[in-house]
Amino acid sequence: MTQPSKVFIAYGEEDKEFAESIYESVEKLGLECYAFTKVHRSGNWIPETDLEEIKSSEYFVVIITSNSINSQWVNQEIGVAYALGKRFIPICEENIISEIKGFIQNVECIRYRTGSYSNEEECISEIVLKLREEKKIDKVKIVCKCGTKHILNLPPLDSHREFVKGDDKVLVYEHCSICGNRLIICPLTLKVIDTVEWGEK
Image (cartoon, rainbow, N blue to C red):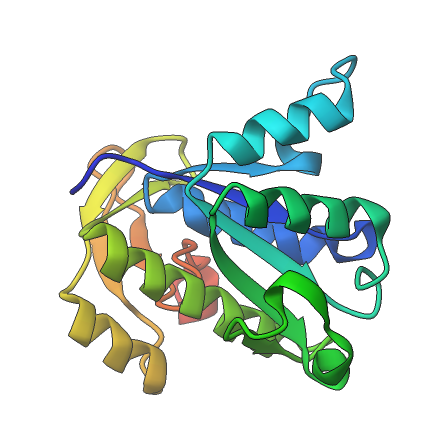
């Protein structure tokens, strides 16, 4: 696995839960990640903190929806990231793609349908697969319900893509070495799936 990179996530307040889900999936890949509501420390001056975090990031993920397209903060962050030559991964609400102007107008985006949890997972999977490919990532970091941390091998990237496309929603299936709990990993988000969902009593 190559040297860890950093991912900055820009978003409007209304899209906080989606942004935090992206944050959690990126962290599972072993990459450092910044999302304001996840890591901002009270008392730090926001503009200065955001500027430093963008500077130290390689990737700039931005969620553009009807909630954020006119956000002063989000648009300023986009301008800073563009000026610093960051690698953009835009996630754009389908209904407003034609309204997007400026620095990322011609950047290929991940299409997003607001209010659709399954589509949120699909968007996250595109980010996961892109980062896996570009950073040559072959492991996932997860935490069992018992609190034990694990680093598990991921399948080859082509196999991962097939898992995402198919009906099989199990990417990695192992057991915790401490409690014996099944470690079932969702191929879309890399989160641990609750064993109850798989019929285990």
